[in-house]
Image 1 (cartoon, rainbow, N blue to C red):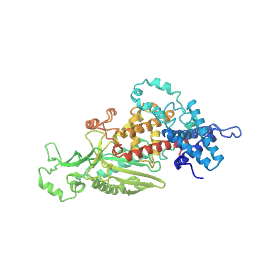
Image 2 (image 1 turned 90 degrees about the vertical axis):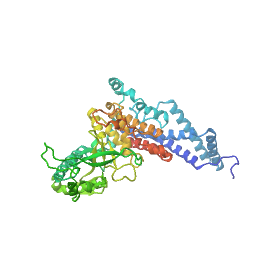
Image 3 (image 1 turned 60 degrees about the vertical axis):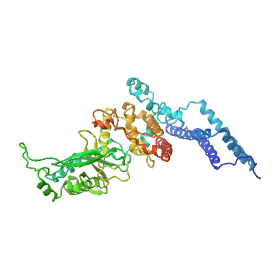
Image 4 (image 1 turned 30 degrees about the horizontal axis):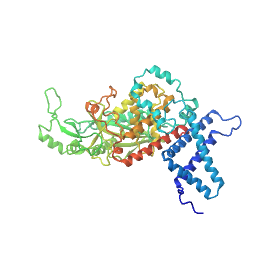
Length: 545
């Protein structure tokens, strides 16, 4: 039997949408009204079922919103086409199923409009913490604290804590969070202490090797990055990054020149090596002749391996040559280290750092040594780290804020209660990012902005869901504006005890989302990945995976 001429064809997407909604309603019904067995469900099982129901409610709401966004005429034609298809096939049960679906949708919609949405995994997180519907209204409620950050900072903390006393996560939900959100299995503190001791020993021996030479002088290593900040984006593959500052050898000085070409994002520098006068003076005991005033001394030095003809390209310090030089020093110094008797070392390939892995039985420790030159007397360095560019010239040293960021987390730790969950919150967010286009540094930047705005006393266990919601709301707002400001550069509220050069304080903060502002396709993809990230965080909180 041919279809009527004016009947709209049934689009596959509409049928799939209706089928998906019907299955969601059926699943929700089975979960919400389970068959009781014996003396009933235990408390933990009941809570799990409520949390799963919340996820289904979210999916239902999202599908309903998709339908509401379509025009009324389109919706009527779509449902009319479904009814016509059922009548054409003479299938009474198909027609009854479609009508039943419509009745269920009306029932669920009316029930949601009459009852407050106060169950699910955000129960106990108040009006924030990533709870509620997927719609914009509840998302705005989640981020209310973020948008009102200035007001929060000025509130009376006693009054805030008094309100928060009622904002307690139920005991069983706390148990689920602690049991199912897995933190790094390695003891980061122990690994950081071992890495620090190892590098101190390395530097001591290397300085002995380089004594009376014309090579840069390595200084004590500074632990940087996630492991030294107390969290790790990869639980099974922790890398301990350290920054080894280099001082110029006698007779030379380092002069930093900013790269103004704009070819590489961020603030990048060249390290120009300049000779300085070291001629003997009345109060000096050494008899070092400078190359400025004694050309014959310069010629003699050029005939031997030295700093300028080994580590420099032209007049500029070369990152890759410096890395190869340090590899040789590590290989030469290793037999003299006490650890060499019980550990085995494997040097790993890296063109802009010195990376190696130590193993002892089942234990392992991976260390990545970066090199840097201090900017004045501050906590900012130019380093050998990679840049965002696909190709970074070997004479380019990007400005790094890793030391300042590490000290910021230490500053927060000194103020935070012992049971603060700010690092666990960051760990959870980083874990959910695997396979998604957002970098862990972007999420770390968001958390640092929030730590600088929301009092550290409000990052406890009972507020973890709210802080997760704040972080996601901050990410959503940044995506919509296509802008995420760097945390250190241009931050006038940075802790005063962490020293920043004046030009870093007053500079325009780099936009970590600059690519999204230039590429509409990348921005669309980022918005999709934001929704995927929300779903992952919910699954981690509810199911622990």
